[in-house]
Each structure stands twice: as structure tokens, then as C-alpha cells.
Length: 302
Image 1 (tube, rainbow, N blue to C red):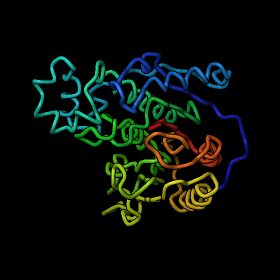
Image 2: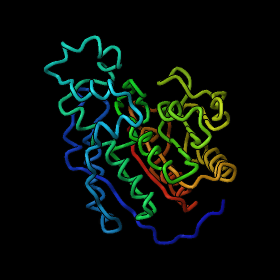
Image 3: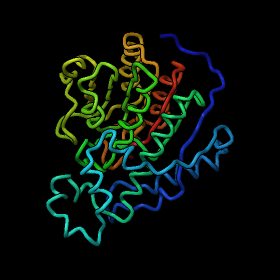
């Protein structure tokens, strides 16, 4: 698949000013406030002039149950800090509690995160944009009926399901320091989505993403895992990322790409153990962009 020369791309950016108000609780490493800080950088650098900015709709229960189970979404909609004691059994069943706490506005937070990724996918499907961004998304650990790793609703899976309405093959790439387990699991048995995850592996959350996990059934060889050691720097990362992604593009030939840009692979992250710089992380994004395919970028950890 040929690289595209630099041409002017229409960029759409999804952001809701409420997203920074949600608070997972004292000492919790997941801080939605960072999405607001990122937005302020975008304003102060003048980057907003180069894109269309949209406020996403709140994803409906109907939209979220395209992937998640009805009873799980019903639970997320019902639970609040003041009625938690009534839901002890369900909290255990749906893995809500410590890593994934109940906080004020939890359901609305999920709606905004998912709404941005679904709206971005619709925009790409309509060919009304070439690049769509939802930094409030990227919650790649959420499962069909279970919260996991600070993630409740898997906006990425919902976005990919939307893209699959118009695209025969969608490529998912994950450069968060953690394995993109929820997305891989959702598409493990299909050949229409290839999932490629670069992540720290061994005694590390979520514990999945072994090199030998390659998909199953029709999806065999359509899950690609690149387990990495601590301390990966820009040069080492790029020497792995460039040939793998180039080969994946050539063999899979997707017609749309989703990139999870988790920033916890950057140096200094309190949970990650990689040594990527912002420039090295950005070069991964740039490489994927150069293929010139409809491109959905989401956030993630860090």
C-alpha cells in the first residue's frame, strides 16, 4: 500500500467541555481532566484553526448495546455513589469497584466518550472528513459485560462496528503501554478487523497479548501482538513499528484505520515503563497517517 504525499486533509475533532469534570476519585490514576488540558493546548497553539470542532452527542443505550450487553448498560445507567449498597452483587459481576470505581456522572462520562467515537466513525463513513479525533475515547479494556482497567464502555469497538457498515476491512492499531485486550477480544474471530497491539508484557496488566495469541476461527492470523520489554525508546520502538505496520498494510489492505494513541507509553508515566518521547509517539501517528486512509484517532491511558 503506497504512502500518500502530504495533501490537505479535513480534520474533525470531537470534544465536550464537560468531560474534564468527571472525577474517578482521590489518588486514582485515570484523570479525565487531562482531556481538558489537552484541549487547552490545542486552543493555545492555534491548532483549532486547522480543524472542525464538534461537540459529540451522548451515545444512547441503543448505540452502546451494539456491543455491550443490555443488563450491563442498564447497570451503568442505574448505579450512583449514593445507591451502591443496593448493587453489591452486580458490582462484583460487572467488575465495578476498585480499578473501575462508581463516581458521579459515570454513565454520562461513558456516553460522551462513546458518542465521540461513534460520531467520528459516522463522519468518516459519510466521507465528510479524512481524519477524526476523539481524545475522550480509547477505552480499550472494556468488555461486553464487564468494566476493566479504568474502562467501562468500549468506544473503540463501537466506532469500529460503525466503520464496518461501509468498510470491508478495518485495521486497529494500539500504541498504549497496555495490551488492547477488549478490542482484540471483540474481533478475535473475524477476518474483517485486524488488531495490532504494541505493549509491555509479563507481570503487567491486563496479562494478555502473548505473541502466540493470533485470533481464532475466521479471525486466525488477524490478531497481531507485539509484547515488548521495559524501557523501549524511540529508536527501538520505531525499528519494530515501521516494518510491522508497513507489512500489515500491504497484506491486510484495510480501507479504514483506527489508532489508539494511549500516552502511557511515554517516558515518566507513573504506570507505564516505556521511554518514548512525544516525538517518537508522534512519529507512529505520522506513519499511519501517511497511508492516506480514513483515519480515526482516539486517546487512552496516560
